[in-house]
Image (cartoon, rainbow, N blue to C red; front, side):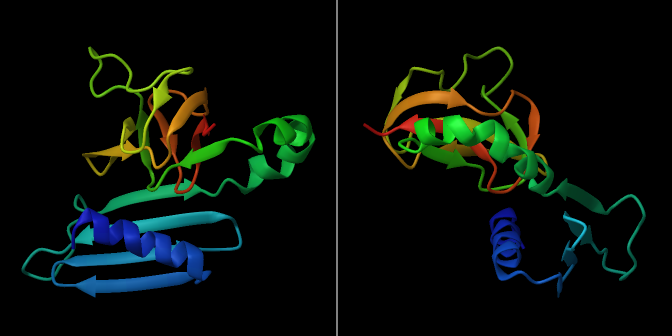
Length: 165
């Protein structure tokens, strides 16, 4: 099972509202849990040929759903919501670490004020030691970068605001 299939499975579970999904295929065992405590846990275990899971092998990612910040947000966002309604929000398609540069010694992919077109790389998100280029799905001008460099991001978390006009 490759990373893309795992990402699609996580998206499906998040949208379906299921509380837990377990999947075993060959040497991969995946458990995705979402609960009322607003946490989502994804556990991916590579099972060796013997069938026993070794303690060093599990890869666990725990992500807190952005529910707590949204509860406080209506007071803070009451005024900006009117201003930002004309902007398109570019969201994270995966859970991982957000990077604005391809490497530490390179310039950032996109800066506030830059004009971008559909397909331009805006950032990379590292997930399970893989760097995924996040491309723009819209053309326009970057108004705001919503995430700090080298920060962890959640699935569907807003990353950029783009003015499509």
